[in-house]
Length: 194
Image 1 (cartoon, rainbow, N blue to C red):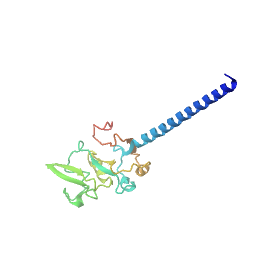
Image 2: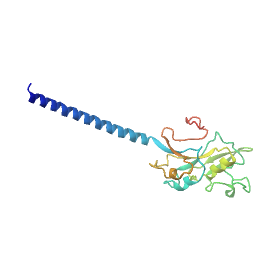
Image 3: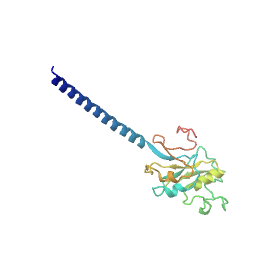
């Protein structure tokens, strides 16, 4: 084999190896970008109920109207109290379901008699707009079984949550979409706070 043939062969091999290398790097780059995108999509915004200070900003700063943040009730923690601090206004005139005695401005909490002196409290999610008044009352005068959570069927999962930017307690965080809720008292959620 002559030098010309060897040079052509080396050049051809060099070009082939270079093309293989650039193809491999391109595939690796696309796979890396796809992996990053998948990881970003696998996370959702959630409110840590153990950090929340019930400031009311969830109602005012969510891009969804009404807010995608809603009150949830951890029944396992509830005392089913007759004097529920999350349901009744402090110094209410009577212990009744009359609107003037309710803490919630939209009557989003339904009170149902169980037996003397116990009542069950249910959140009517369509009426709740995340003002956190009931959460503050339940935390101040109860066991904190009422707390806020981002409802993912309503949330648009903004790249930067507008509520998280103004949250004074830094209570908003990205959590895996496979475990999107941080419910108090939920021992099945794998949450170490419970």
